Amino acid sequence: MKKKSIIGVGLFLAMALTATVALAGGMGRGFGWGPGYGYPAVPNLTAEQSSKIQALQKAHLDAIAPLQQDLLKKKTELRSLWLSPTPDQAKITALQKQILDLQAQIAQMSTNLKLEIRKVLTPEQQAQLSLYGPGMGRGMGKMARTGRW
Image (cartoon, rainbow, N blue to C red):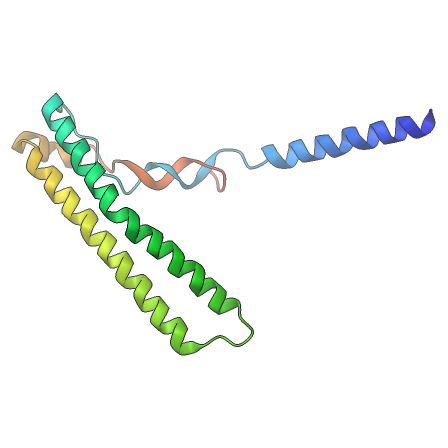
């Protein structure tokens, strides 16, 4: 009976420790969904404007998806090059340049998207953009599990 009690207490402590570690992160600032890289919230959008903006955003996401996949692949390859016992400087430098080129291409496409969205807005809505600050997008938000508020 004593052996069963010890095993039971041990299992309970293991589960409590696991739960404590799993819940310890909490909600804090870090990369998550929140104010960040998205386009600012625009007040008083008409249904037509909203649908045009959504279509532009969908087309943008479809256009950059292959670039993002390629970027992820190249970053993974770069990480493996750095982890090799004898890193090849020429390969690392070439891969870093390719990564920077992809990032620049994605950034340029994002800039083009923002300019296209501005064309959909009225002059009054464009004037109000600065009042509303950054939009919702991937950036420093409150839904990440690291950092502090």
